[in-house]
Amino acid sequence: MVFKVIHKNIDKYLLRSILGIIYILSLLFIMQLSIRDKNQPWIYVNFQLVSIIFYTVILSVPFKYHLFGPIVVAFMIFNSALSSWESWCLAIVLIAFYYSLNYVKNHTKNKFPFSVYLLISLISGFAYWFFIKVKFSISNPIFFKQVIYLLIIELFTFGYIAILYTDLESRAALFQDATHDKLTHAYNYDAFDIDFRSLFKDNVISDGKFTMMMFDIDHFKSINDTYGHLGDKVLQTVVRVVQSVLAKNDKNIKLYRTGGEEFNIIFPHYHVKETQAIVKEIFEAVNHTEVDVKENKIHITISVGVSEISKKDVSVNDFYSRVDKALYHSKRNGRKEITII
Image 1 (cartoon, rainbow, N blue to C red):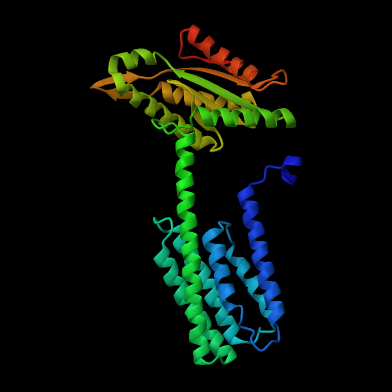
Image 2: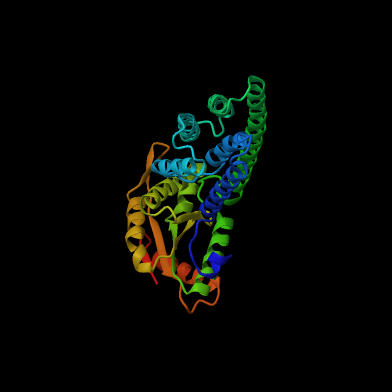
C-alpha cells in the first residue's frame, strides 16, 4: 500500500521474500542470544536446519555466495567461536546444505523432487548433528533422538511444501485457462480488459503513458472459407511470430487475442514514438510469413492501428475507439498498412 502511494514499481514477491529473510535471520539471532552461555546451546539446531530448507526451497531470492563469509564470521564472533574447528565444520555443512538444495531446485525437471530434497536434508542433518555431538559432548541417546526428531520435522516440512506446490500448480493451471486463448495461447479478451482498464486507471492517476497497437489478419474470412479449420494454423503462426518479436524486445509487452482474427498489444510505459521500431518489426515479420496449408502457401499480411493514451481520454472507450479508428483507416486504405493517430 505504501509503495502504491509513492508510485514505486516494487516487485511484491521480491519484497515478501526479503521480509521473509529478515524474519528468519532475526529469529536465528534472537535464538542464539537466548541460548548463549546456557547448558544446552544446541537446543535450536533443528530449527536452524529447517530455516535453511524454508529459505532455499520456498523463497526464490538470489543469494551472492561471497556474502557467506561475512555472515559466518559475524555469527562466529557473536558466539565466541572463531577458534573452534567444530564451529567452522558446522558452518561448512550449512553452506553445503544450502548449496545442494539450491542446485537441485535449479537443475531438476521435477517441480518438487521430494525424495532428493529429503535425502540431502537427512545427510546434511546427520553431519551437522555429528559435529554438534563432538563440540558439546552430547551422549549417543540424545544424538540419535535429535536426528530422529529432525527426520520427523523434515518429513512434515517437505510434505507440507509438496502440498503447497500442488495447490499452486492447480491455481496456475486455472489462471492459465482463465486468461489465455486455448487455440493460440495468447492472452484472451478477459485478460486484455482487466489489464487495459488497470493501466488506464493507473495512468490517469499518475499522469503516465502507455500505447496500444491493434491489428487484424487481412482477408482472414476468405482464408477460413477456403481452408476451413486449417485457418487456425494461420492464427497460431501469427501469434508465434509476434510473441518472438516481443520476447526479443520487452517481456512486459503482452499480446492479446481479442476477437476472431483481431489482436491487441499493450505497451506499458511507452510513448507512441518509442513503440514504432517494435511495431514495424512485428509488421515486417508477419508480412514476410507464409503458412503451408493443403500444399498451398498462404502469404499473411496484417493491418495495424496504433495510438497513445491522451489526457483528453475520459474513459477507456475513448482510447480504445481511437486505436480502432486507426486500424480501420488502414483497412479502408488497401490493408497491409500501419496507421498512427
